[in-house]
Image (cartoon, rainbow, N blue to C red):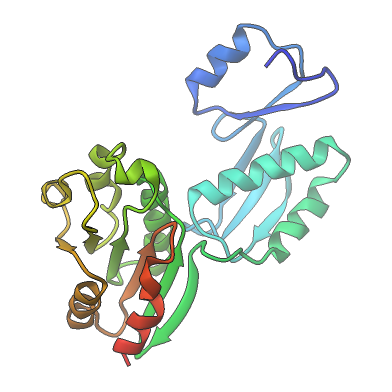
Amino acid sequence: MRTIPSEGLVIHPTTEPALQRVIEMGCWTPVQTTGAGGQWQVKLLSEDGSKFEVLFDGEAQGIVDWDMTGQHNVANALVTLAAARHVGVVPSMGIAALSAFKSVKRRMEKVADVNGISIYDDFAHHPTAIATTLDGLRKRVGDAPIIAIIEPRSNSMKLGAHRDGLPESVNDADEAVWYAPANLGWDLPGIAALCTVPSTVCDSIEGIIEHVRQQAKPGTHVVVMSNGGFGGLHGKLAEALK
């Protein structure tokens, strides 16, 4: 922290006590805070985070109205606005740019609409990302059914480093479908049994497709979460639902 030059800027959320403790050890750089009680705040105009007003030092700067959802994306937007302002981009210009921003691939990307069933692709690959993705979708679709399909693909997931956080991560879904590849070195069925929502463990792509084909009805939102290709599941599932 002390290596950041004095003409730089440290931006951090107010919700992380550990960061505050680090800064209190010695910081020779200007600091700005985001989130509740911070210098940069938002007033949500839609519960899912797709529309919000930006405030800096208590003064309204403008409204972001974009395609993104989720509290994590709102938090990221505040940080980018703070950083941009520091290098000369006025907040109103930054807000206009965010409102025009089109989401990148694999971030809650809707890849198919088949017979009233929506299929999304998302890069979420650990419990926190899974939870924030589902939270954003839940706030967007209300009470509509959500099926979460999750592949433990990353190295840390394969090793089971995040397994204790997985049951709670799917609380905003109506059902979770877990893929258990043959080389998985931990008890995924045991973890799935701890979920508060109905959970199914499948050991093949075909098994996942057949299960979802039976469960998904018009109005259902199916979110496929993996940081890999997942065996082309998205396209195969869309074809099976026709």
